[in-house]
Amino acid sequence: VPYDGMTDTWVKKHRLIYIGATRHPFILSIRDGTVDLSAFKRWLGQDYIFVRAFVPFVASVLIKAYKKGDESSGDMEVILSGLGSLNDEIAWFKQEASKWGVDLSQVAPEKPTQDYCGFLEELMRPEVDYTVAMAAFWAIEAVYQESFAHCLEEGSKTPIELQEACQRWGNDGFGRYCSSLRNIADRQLEKAASGSVPLVKVSEDAVSKAEVTFLRVLEYEVDFWNMSCGTD
Ligand code: HMH
Image 1: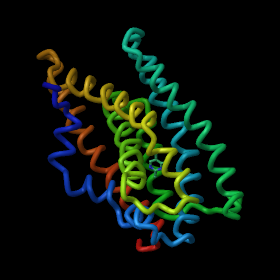
Image 2: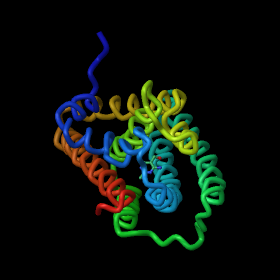
Image 3: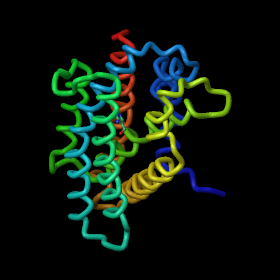
């Protein structure tokens, strides 16, 4: 019987908001082929800004993993592979933008993008627990993985010119990478939840902070999709 990790518990407990982030009308419009291409272009420009801010956040998680000093966990390798994919992702955004005639140097961050990037900045602080940062990292990647994989499922009518974008986050390799992030987050949460007695207070604090952080990620993701649709 597979162990139900803390992240599973959260997804079940906050199911409606999780569905709100992973089955958003913007994603459903890609899936049914009715997407407004100006919305897709807006998303492209804003997400490029987000991804640039996401790189130093992931680097900050890498530093936290290094400082834990647990070489045998393999955490650093997983996070480093994430930085490698972000390198490819940035190159893809530039290429995709030129394909759609979007001048990335002229894109200004909209309010939801600014707010989400500000949240990443808060999470980069050294005082933020590795457990909390890992939970956020997993949630951020998992929302995109679940959303875009939905656009590639049997029966979806995703326009051919958007399928490559969906593949970036919807492919099986990205799915496995998200599972690795989830395993790290679950292991950390498990450790925090069963902390030794003198540390109980500190650890419980990390678990509840991580849950709040998970919920905030979902809210920022919904705001980001709303902005892309132009319904914010
Ligand atoms: C807004 N959330 C947003 N953009 C992304 N590229 C990801 C998550 C996943 O990398």
